[in-house]
Amino acid sequence: MMPIRMGLIGLGAMGRHHARVIRQTSGMELVAVADPGGDAYGVAGDLEVLPDVHALIAAGIDAAMVAVPTVHHEEVGLALAAAGVHTMIEKPIAHTVEAGERVATAFEEAGLVGAVGYVERCNSAVLELRKRLAAGELGQVYQIQTRRQGPFPARISDVGVVKDLATHDVDLTAFIAGSPYDQVAAQVTHRSGREHEDMVLAIGRLASGVIVNHVVNWLSPMKERTTVVTGERGAFVADTMTGDLTFYANGTVPTTWDRVAQFRGVTEGDVVRYALPKREPLAVEQENFRDAVAGTGTDIVTMREGVHTLTVIEAMLASAHDGGRTIAL
Image 1 (cartoon, rainbow, N blue to C red):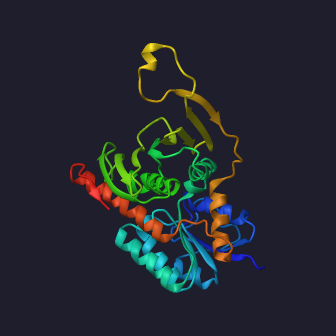
Image 2: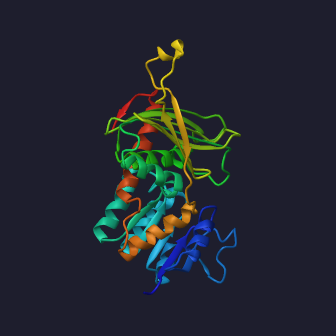
Image 3: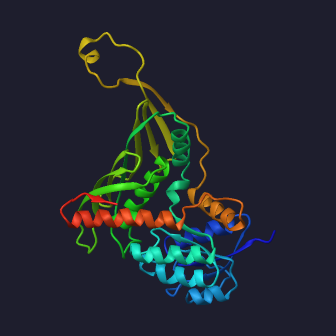
């Protein structure tokens, strides 16, 4: 079978990593790259740096990876769909829900593979967590909480922390729970002097009844990427920085200490950290896209899922603008 002829548009902070991973992925060949701003990281190699998406299409590509600024996702995505090119667009799918709807519809109507690059889904800890939740190991799930904090990323200029980072947490929460959101509320702050928000606290509920909360900012010197799922048998903690998954079981050993025994909640039980194979999530993501294009896999984030995530994200921003009002989805 001939390798998939891949094109990459956007050679910035994320594009350089996509270029490396595409070249390393069996069954893919990077044949064309484009960026009107040039090749700041020197990733093109022997390839000519093309000026735009139309030149990329003219190079005869089968599929494309889009890593341009969010505001350009719609324009580039629609051009690729019109040209019959299977495409994965870096998250979020577009700058607005309406634009995302147009992109998703274009790929659906053309019968093309359209995916959104939510790489956290491909983290070993998240994949194992989802598998164990689906197997019922936690029993009924009560709550999912995420914490995503760290210093400001210089790569970001066109969106705030909600569309850049909280979007990951919304997607992975719905993914591991197997349920979309049905309501959300949020508060944001602007502490860094930029146009866009740099901190968000959000709470919500999934259609399944699971309650969720997200703490996200890029003003913390402490870097953290943690997802905690609490249920009737204990709690799973996934650390997507290290790829580790830990299970904290509810206690089963009776206590004779009266003051503790009178508490009607759970007690601490065994703690297990699972030994997991750890692969680079970006490599797993590209392999999943390759398989979808080849018709041998379906493990991608669909554009419809990308639109739902963007709907939740925009509802967070609308809620914060309206004093934290809960918004039904």
